[in-house]
Length: 216
Image 1 (cartoon, rainbow, N blue to C red):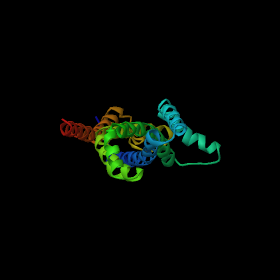
Image 2 (tube, rainbow, N blue to C red):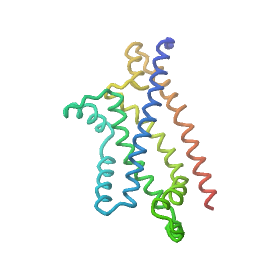
Image 3 (cartoon, rainbow, N blue to C red):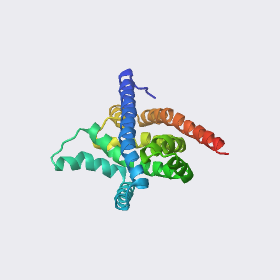
Image 4 (cartoon, rainbow, N blue to C red):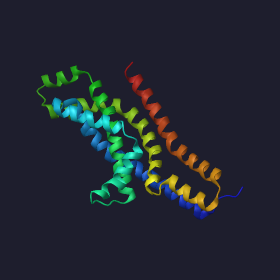
């Protein structure tokens, strides 16, 4: 069994770094849009809620790989050429927004209506009720499932290799093509994914435990 060279290991670690960067970009972009979608699903007028719900159902019913193909191969057909990183970040952000939007919608609706009614009795307007009463409570409810979903975001970045973005899986494929050592390469990749995802999973379970204790 031949080990990888230091240069190959460094190349793989660079891919690991790009996996983390792409995960953060997808979470930031998808989180910002998902927050707007969640607010619209709960507080907007019925026609807007219907449009948002259709968007969420459409994105959730579309494979992520198709979204990545649309951003990388579809946008150039409209005259907008994008590099693999922006295309991957955009496709993942759209995908993440639909799921985080639904997660956060449920968390907003989980806040008892009596809390908002009590705030209204204190003459707080809708914006003040949202910022000072509803969101702080919804954030506590949303933290465990959000952290848990981050694990899925990290894993799904591997699909960006299909459009040529050199994240960890694509880097591993390139190393394997040069070394013909798939077992070593992909076991190492699996270990790196585990090192990244397992702490998030543990953190999510601990947060769920704390939330359950707080509501007993």
